[in-house]
Length: 265
Ligand SMILES: NC(=O)c1ccc[n+]([C@@H]2O[C@H](COP(=O)([O-])OP(=O)(O)OC[C@H]3O[C@@H](n4cnc5c(N)ncnc54)[C@H](OP(=O)(O)O)[C@@H]3O)[C@@H](O)[C@H]2O)c1
Image (cartoon, rainbow, N blue to C red; front, side, top):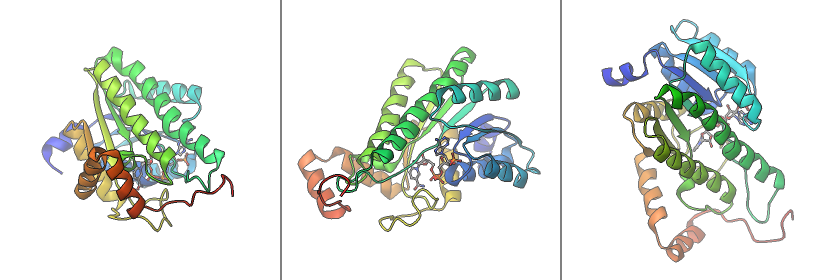
């Protein structure tokens, strides 16, 4: 890691949602070397405590709270409590998320609700609570973890795609309103974490460690939006810019489609 990146992260007060697993876990491990003051949030406290115990000799400090991001009051209270504890808030990493099937023939309203409430409501709760503290400070960093699935409405994954595109649009709008705040939107391709284990359609899969390294470098370089790995960035850009009929032609031939039968059948 370069000196510039190390000095960007050193002693930062960083709140991460979804720290109990996957990308949030790997990020915490990667950042711990910089003597960060961490606020770790997710519903399960036990894995976050295990992570903090494993990193107890890193020189970083850990503040942990069980928090369901779908619950606005829980989020507001947790963000304020961390701000008080750490004496400020430098970075909020809006990372909690779920990815579930939303194909026509396998439709489940429970999947729809879980993705909207976690990936959109939860992300907005977290961002807004953090911005209410960062705006008066006159500084701060908001990192939004979207997904390469935001490239276009993906078959079988339409609701997940829309939640991640929604996060991108929301953060882009806030970035215009609040130029004193750094916003970095990150759309990862497939990373080997519990969210997609067992999915046979994964491709170009990366390790969480590699993904964490790429993400913390992108934030330190103040990128506005990144898609990774590089070949996923190319695919993302191509899919976003294809005319609709061409996109539909490609998607029908290359992506897993659910057979259009009655919902719930
Ligand atoms: N892995 C990939 O290939 C990939 C690719 C693109 C984007 N992403 C995005 O990256 C983010 C992290 O995913 P991951 O890969 O690390 O998956 P993961 O291992 O399943 O982790 C998801 C995290 O979100 C937390 N979470 C879920 N629902 C929550 C809720 N209601 N309240 C608070 N926390 C909640 C989980 O913690 P608890 O269960 O303890 O609450 C867990 O820590 C997600 O937003 C995902 O969409 C992942």
